[in-house]
Length: 201
Image 1 (tube, helix red, strand yellow):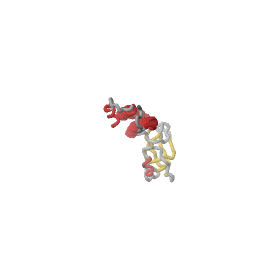
Image 2 (cartoon, rainbow, N blue to C red):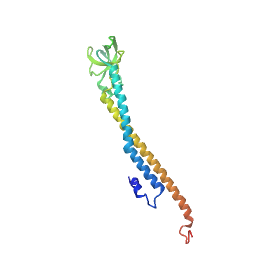
Image 3 (cartoon, one colour):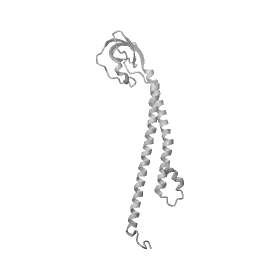
Image 4 (tube, rainbow, N blue to C red):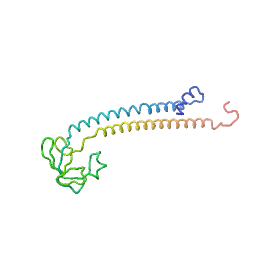
């Protein structure tokens, strides 16, 4: 902000250096990008992700069916779940061999994961299946999809803002180096005659 305010104060200042003006303009542009462009970019990415994820939600709900399965026996070794919505509750799930009827009427028999804490033969539970009757993860929830879209938009905006600030700092660093180099050159020219009477006459 200090560099930006300098744009007005240094307009006609005889001590103004070109690097001072460039630094102020870079700061102003970076501020506008962070305050305007980055939120817009995040909103665009979030909206695009929301549309894609909600379409995926609809597709999954159309292609997957919830059927009633019956426990045949419990398996001793638990299996890891690939469903992101149940990973946190994995310790409360059990692995069983179950029977179920697919949406097309075929009988299925396989090892699956169930939310029953203490399954016994004959217990019934809900099981998500694909169009072929094979066990699959439950479809993505609309609320979860929206959360992912919001996080994608927010993350994009933050990353864009960070890159913008990084670019600004890089430009300023190069300007400072150039400023110091010019000072060194000026000092080298003035150094041999510094303090001598009649210098420059």
